[in-house]
Length: 87
Image 1 (cartoon, rainbow, N blue to C red):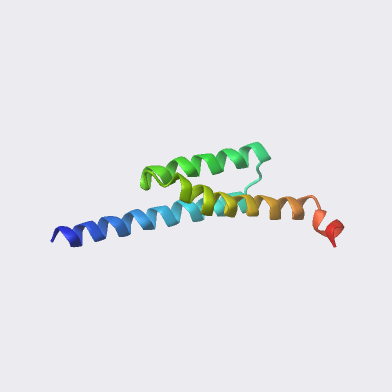
Image 2: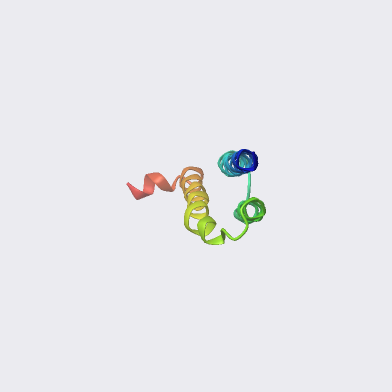
């Protein structure tokens, strides 16, 4: 019985993690933010992720932070029309 309860708790935690990351990614893509505000969103998301998964700083820094930074880079290219100048 305990293992079923533990599995359910893990599933709930992973669903919260996925939702937290998805909301942050959406917000970074769509909200009108300065670079500093966007970096604050990433840092806030990091704190939330580490509450859900303590000790996983390396995973955040290797997987999620680069994902968020790619979103910011893509957004900057579009907003500043830099994509045209790179081609």
